[in-house]
Image (cartoon, rainbow over all chains, first blue to last red; front, side):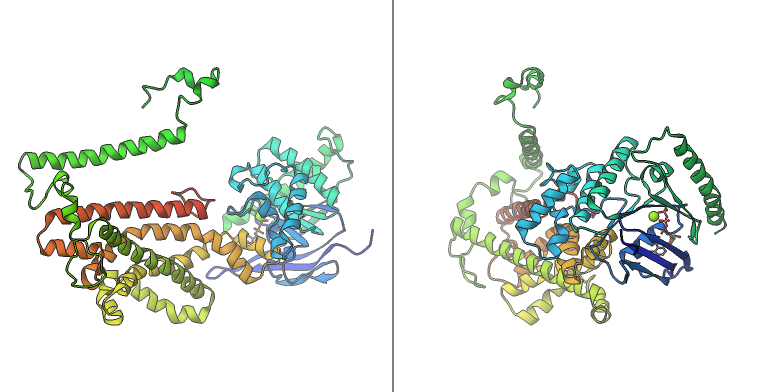
Amino acid sequence: MSSRPAISIRSVSKRWTPEGRAPVQALSNLTFDVAPGEFIVLLGPSGCGKSTLLYMIAGLEDVSGGAIFCDGEPVTEPSAERGLIFQEASLFPWLTIADNVAFGLAIQHEQPVRRREIAIEMLKRVGLGDMLDKKPDELSGGMRQRAACARALAMRPKVLMMDEPFAALDVQTRSRMQDFLLQIWRDSGACVLLVTHSIDEAISLADRVVVFTARPGQVKTIVPIDLPRPRQSRDPRYHAYRDMFTELLADEVERAFAEQEAG
Amino acid sequence: MSADVDPASLSPAEPERKVGLVLSPAWRRRFATLGWGFVSIGLFAGIWELLWALGYANPLLLPPPHLFLSDIPGTLQYFDRSNRIGSVASGGGVLALLLTMGSTTLRVVIGLTLGFICGVAVGATIHYIKPARNLLLPTILLLAPISPVAWLPVAIFVFGIGDVPAVFLVFITVFFAIVLSTGAQIESVPKNYIHVARIMGATRRQTFWRVILPSILPSLFMTLRLNLFAAWMVVLIAETVGVGTGLGQITSMARSTFNARLVFFTMGIIGVLGFLSDWGLRQVQRKMLWWVAPNQGASR
Ligand SMILES: Nc1ncnc2c1ncn2[C@@H]1O[C@H](COP(=O)(O)OP(=O)(O)OP(=O)(O)O)[C@@H](O)[C@H]1O
Ligand SMILES: [Mg+2]
């Protein structure tokens, strides 16, 4: 494994300046690296800037200070190498599932036949091989998220970012989706950055968990999860991690609430 | 409707009996709609006939349906085959009727199509190009609330007498609505759609044609449908003034010659055409905008 990080975040800060409202310092002085193929979970109280960070890594938003490097290159604009999956599936309702998955390929002028082949291959990988010509609203929420995953994977990304991808799903579907995600991650070799509110999700998925402070978001601590996969929630060490994260988050959530009530 | 359907025949225990005996639910719904249509119109006509039979409705002023539908060949005499102003009715017949209906419909269709396309083009230009917005938007906001009917004299001054003023009036009816709605709809395209396009490396042009346009089309089409009836109104008004043929011209002639039968006959035709054109637009919507249910669309 090369020593160069896949993503490196250097003293990044972000200040939102919405028109007609007071500016918001969302992130301040954030620094950490992500190794190639690593699975990182971002955990933090609501409003601490986790989504903002993903948008900046994706290149959809500018940083206000510091810099983000991907494979050593500064991030200046979006790229299909850095796929982003949103909380609610953002499939286009006017395209079939297969055409949605092939959307990025069509943008890059891939041949229609080849496009279809890749779409079929990706949809098979996410277990939607028989949904090719369905409309997005004929699929369940979990299936839509898998299709969105296939759309990102079709571009062979080096980084796969997910913003609370399973938050809207029920508990059973959610745990199935987590297994599925681990499999995708292993197959693709991409590094994954996943934002979640769920401590259990963080422990069962991550190589390392980045815990954020309340706004303005900073890295509170980075916790490597030294448990073999598949991880068992009965494992006493799992419980130790859970207690630790609960404690870490508790004061931050408290601070976030205090601030929200104040202003 | 349910009296002739044995509930047992629908039970899964005897699927073979169901085949051929019972209409599919879709067809039953269609027949029910049709049935209620007949009942509704029948009731309306019945009350009218009743008023006539009781002597409340003067047959010269309000001839009931059986009177204005009885002498169709006579009525058709008034329809003219030539698209010329002031030409004496040539005793037209069915062909002339169809020609009259066709020319009015054609004016509506051309006006709507041009209005829609130009409206989207101007709306998008205003939205994306700042100088264009600064230059055009105030004028458009000033002109938009003016009733299309008020444009009639202008249309005749500019385009003279003929087909163009009628088409122009229909154009005006939808144009401003579509221009304003285009901007608002582009504004409300979900941000995530745009993000996806940007991540996939779409250029601005690709984003517009592949993401923005498909996501605003359903609402724009809804705007078009809402303005369809207004378009039918103004085309008739335009035809009473400046055109040699068309349903509006017939109505106006019927009014000035005090021909109540012809008035109601033409009104019936206009009603049917309006209904059919709305139905036609719904079919277009179903075929081309298949991802939205026919009555939905404004919500997106
Ligand atoms: N487009 C924007 N314009 C202005 N302010 C914004 C914008 N997006 C986010 N913010 C502000 O930045 C802060 C961080 O938002 P962000 O969405 O990144 O938080 P988050 O950690 O993802 O929260 P959650 O867990 O609730 O999703 C919030 O205070 C939010 O109000
Ligand atoms: Mg968020």
